[in-house]
Image (cartoon, rainbow, N blue to C red; front, side, top):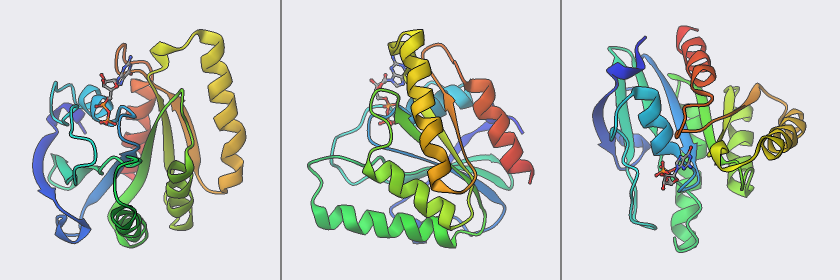
Length: 196
Ligand code: GDP
């Protein structure tokens, strides 16, 4: 499994338009600006596989990246924009919980959070949905290059203390797209999920 083989497959406006529910996929989710696109680009060693600049509030597509014939990365739309109408937010939440619940080929969920603003309401809700669907979750605390060592440890400990409350298979890593901190741990988790 070589992440640098990732290639764009398709964009889907909603989960019904995703490729057939076959093979294996791992989904990436996070609030807008959490650093999801940057992390995907670092993971795949590509400068602009996932787009890092977006128009806030615009309806976003689900991007599908193929790794090989039966493994995919799913780049879910960023959430949390204040300006998005409530009805649209609720529709998105409904679609996402449905995706986590019904997608058979889904092997795990990566939830990216800015280490300075972790575990917002929707982040937590997402983890609850995944756990309720027996899906393992990896919390990736991003942009840790922005914090001093002591602050990093404190942020990590805070999340580690919150994790047992979710009940399921939830783990956390520190990550920086700038200097690739945490990349081996992210890769290891994905290898494990895609192998089982
Ligand atoms: P997305 O909306 O979740 O896809 O977030 P992006 O990947 O587009 O990143 C949002 C902003 O944060 C951009 O300006 C990135 O350059 C910046 N950013 C992302 N990851 C990191 C990181 O690890 N370190 C630093 N310092 N900035 C980052």
